[in-house]
Image (cartoon, rainbow, N blue to C red; front, side, top):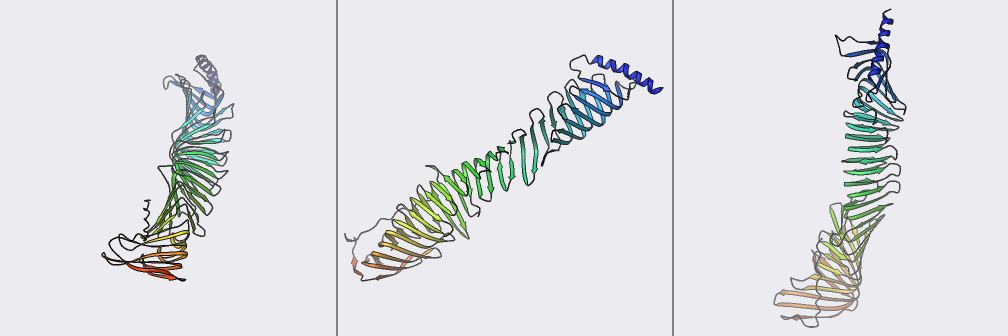
Length: 484
C-alpha cells in the first residue's frame, strides 16, 4: 500500500515538473523513477530513487538516485550513464545538471566515449548543446593504439578536434610525443603543436616550439629551435619542413647539419636533406661553416655552398680551411671522407706553418684531419721563410710534399725545377744560391728548410748580395692568409 501511495504522489509531482519545463531553457524532463519523495520541511529538493531516467535534449541519463531542485538543477548519484543519439556515452559516479547553462558537471571515475575515442578522468564538464568536453585534471585519452595523457583539455565531438595542455604525453606503438600544448584533428590526422614539443616517430626525434604534423602524409612543418635527428644525422634551424615518407628535410635560418657519425657539423642559412645527401647554402655576408672533429684535431672550413653525397663533400663559392698551423684556400674543394682525399681547385693556396705552397691544382691526403701527403700539379711553387724579409723560393712543374705530425717534412719538385736559396750570416751579409734542375729535394725541420738537394744535372751560381737584390733575382709576393 505504501508503494502505491508513493507512486501516486510521483505521477502528480511529475506533472508539476513537466509543467515547469514549459520555459525554453528547461530541457530536463523526468522519464521515470521507482520512487519520488519530497518533504518541504527537510529540503527544497525532490528525491528520485531507483532506475532514474532523465531526458537531456537528445540524450538520456540514467542513475541510481537523484535530487531535483526548485531552480531546475539535478544532482545525480551512482552508476550515472548518459547516452546520446550520436553514439556518445558518458559513465560516472556523480553529476550536476544545470539547464540554465546547458552543461553537465561530471565526476567520479568519469569515462567519455565517442565512436572509438574515449576520455578517462576524475572530472569533466560536458556541454549539452555544444557537445564540448572539458577537463582540468589528469586525463587518459584512448583511440585505437594511441594513448594520450594531459592535465587539461577540450574535446568537440562535433569537429572531432582535441585541445590538450599541461605535460601532454602521447604513446602509439613505439612512437612518443611530449608537448606542453597541442591539438589533434581526428578527421585529417593532423597534429598541431603550440608550445615546446618533442616527437619520437619511427626512429626520428623532432623538437620544436610550434609546428604542424600530418600523420597520414608523414609530413610536417616545425619552428622555434626546430630539429630532426635520425640515423642520417641532425637537421636543425629556425624552421624546418620534414617528409618522413620521402626521407627529406629542409631548414631555414641558423641551420645546423650533422652527419650520423657526429664528427662533422655544418652551419649556414639554408639546408636541404634528401636520401643521404645534403645541400647547405650561406649568403654573401654569411658563409657555410664546417667543423670536423676526429681524434684531438679539428678541421674548420668556410665556403658559400656545400653539397654532401654519401662520403663525398663538395664546397664551392670560395673555400677557406684551417687545421692547427695548416690552412688553405681556393675557389672549390672536393673531399672524399672515406679515403680522406681532398682536391683544391681554382688558384689554390696551402700554408703549413710559415710555408706557402701554390699550384694549378692541389691534392691532399688527410689522416685524422692532419695533412699526410700533398701534390701540387702545374706551376708548383713553395715560399719558405729565410728571415723577416726574405723567402726561399722553390718552383717547378709538379711538387710532392710529405708531412709528419701535421708539419711539412719533405718536398720533391719535379720538372723545370728552380730554387732561390738565401744564406744569411747577418743583416749585412746575405748570399743567394740560384739553381735550376729537373728534380729538387728539400728537407724541413721545425718548419724551416734544413737541406736542399739538386738532382739531374743542376745548374746555378752562388753569390753575395749587397743592400739591394740584383734585378734578375725574382721575389714572389706572399698571399695574405684569410681569417676563418
